[in-house]
Image 1: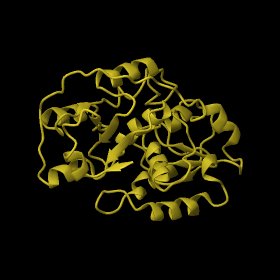
Image 2 (image 1 turned 135 degrees about the vertical axis):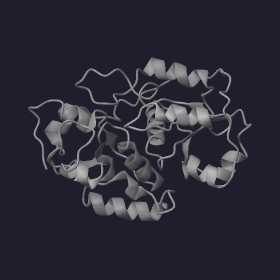
Image 3 (image 1 turned 30 degrees about the vertical axis):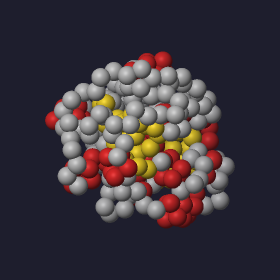
Length: 276
């Protein structure tokens, strides 16, 4: 699930490894591409969180709805993804955006996908090479096999949000969860009954992921009597919620399910209740 900078450096010329740069900024959607063009890990392709990793927005389906599966599969195939290929994703934000690709590929049946632990900041800190070249297209053999039980919709969340058999975990920071200093979505607050675990709690001070034992203990404390598989993950738009799912998987736990629409879908309907 995690690849070190040493491991990736040794595999840059391996045709069975495919690397993706997923840098992004919610306040400046072009920033990730600009950073990629200025210098990226050699051989890496850029994936846009607003385009490649998300679908069409309707105004009521959240800020990052799931992408069209066939379109996403075509993008993966143009980059050489297929059976037996190891995918590595990285960003410059502790994996906050790279986890979206990790979740999407696993949701669609491709298990061999990992994050670069420490991301490009560690790669640069170690003085490793960067490139401005865009790789040539490759032929892949990625066939999506969606796990239809891997997600829940807004109706499920509304029905079970305060049911003790389900635990909704919101990955936004504590202030946004509490309805304070909301700068992204038009309504502040959270889904009634949800608990909060800011995704950055999965990282050690050096920006790398905490050890599995530590993560396991923290999620067990959060979940209490709720089994891990009964967790439902959300955030602002279904992206950083995947960070908590990644951390649970890293800890050897079932990850539960994703609510892709998350708060941005929930709050788009003024009839939905809001907790603060």
